[in-house]
Structures are given as C-alpha cells and as structure tokens.
Image (cartoon, rainbow, N blue to C red):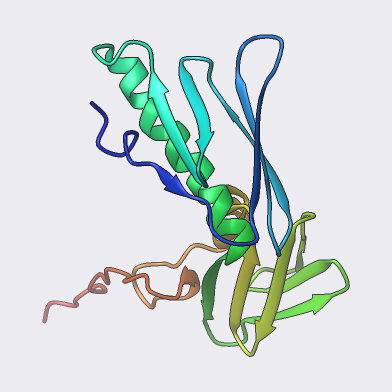
Length: 184
C-alpha cells in the first residue's frame, strides 16, 4: 500500500472540491478557495471519492508498482491544490554581488546582474512578485508554477562558487571553492 495515498484529505472550511470524470476516465478535481481556483487532473487508475468532507483515494490494483506511485502522486497533487487555494505558496530569492540590482516595471522583473545588458523577465499570470532591496519573493497558489518561476529567475545568474555572486534561494548554502594559491 502507498503510505501517502491511503491517507484521506480533510477538506477545510471554505474550500469547495468537485470531482468528475472526463471521456478518457481520468478524474478531474476542481478546487475553489479564498485565494482562487485550481484544476487537478489525475489518472484513471486512481479513484477519488468525496465522503463527509474527506477525499479518499483508492486504486484497483494495490500490488502494481506503477499504480502505487500514481496513488501517492494523485493524493499529493490534490492536497497541494487545497493548500494553495487556502494558504498559497512562496519562495524567496536573494541577489548577491557588487552592483547587482533588481526592480519591478509593470509585469516585468528587470535584473542587472553583471551582464552588459539588463535582463527582463516576464511575470506569468497567477504569480505575484515582490521586490525589497536585493530580495525577490515569488508567491502564488500553484506550487509547481511558483517553483518553476523561481528556478527560471535563479537560472538567469546562478551563484558562482568563488565569491558567491549571483541569484540564490534564501536558505540555500553555496559551497565555496578556494581560489588559486601562488607557490613561492
């Protein structure tokens, strides 16, 4: 049995979950809450039931390795949607380097990170970005989208191992390397 998949999800107050099936037999969960609405598609191998303010996930074949994996995945995706519409998700990035700056200009994030030009990053729909000095806070209701946007911003100028200059996550530790040593 999947340890994650067999746990039921408690539906919190103020969250509405509708479970339906499409033409291919896949389950679609519409999750609505105070922060917005999300749609989660789950495979047909996993059955979802809404009983007494709880979502219960089951599979037909508990011995199949792929079905067990899909069981836990489906439960986690729906749980992330419920957490997203109630609390939301956020990631914080930090910019380190002499002369490195970041600013918001409308729906664009403008970065000066040591290149000969400014880098403009278009902010996708459903994502809020806040800039404070050299810190960037990416937030939204979709966990996957928040992580993807954070990774794309970090990829613009990854932190280098000698001085630590670049864009890194707030809690990330950069392993430093020693520079060249001159023998005398």
